Image (cartoon, rainbow, N blue to C red; front, side):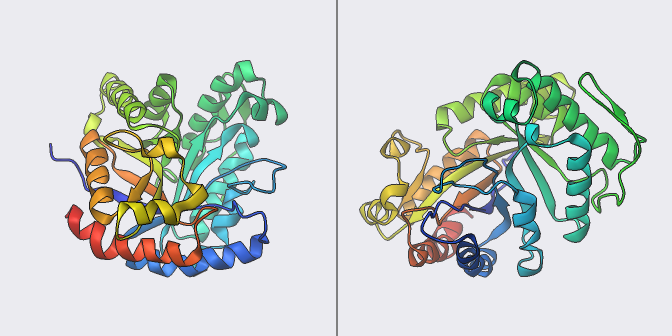
Length: 314
């Protein structure tokens, strides 16, 4: 079966310690219309709990996405929400409400996070896998109107109102870089979601785990989506793109025939994206405005993506 064309999302971050959050949000706001015009279909906010002023993400992605509802028609995604930081019932309510407020545009990307973070929020690290599995099952049940949920780690009572606009609730894209995560995505989710630091080789292995898990469950491997976060910096030449990316670029991220970071000329980047598509990637969330990249360069990247990369992928 032919591979489906990759869909692209705009991944936003807040790794600008010298700027206030409101200022950073206003700058991102300036990229949304250009992203829509550049072939992007979604915008994504991650989640991070850190005392570091140089954080990449804020600790409340639903609030960030809610602030964008009236400023874009793009779909709204969490990339990714850290499940142990939430009470399952509260999470079901908040996601359902955001889906209603956005008229059915929400995608819930979800992950496990670190053992230290789970412990900080009161989830024993040894039980975090079971807690995440139960939470994903509970979300599915409650978004379908179930009268509560009983799992191995908690019991919930009552229904969630309002119900999501999307039948059965927002899609669940489940992240993680081990085989167990790919199996969880196949069992509980609508996609497997890989992080921005996952190499091409690791992505290929995880796609294999995911497809085998789907097949074992009686689902066609072609029905599952595969999503990745990737840095994107475009310029007229590879050397110019590396220079424009500055401190945002990890030199190791440019290694290999299919690099982890999409940095280069339109021809170089288009070739890498085609390789990911051949491997089975269906969605890419692209970071165009990280720390170390100017606002003008982010605009340049989006413009080149629209004018040169997308036509090369058709």
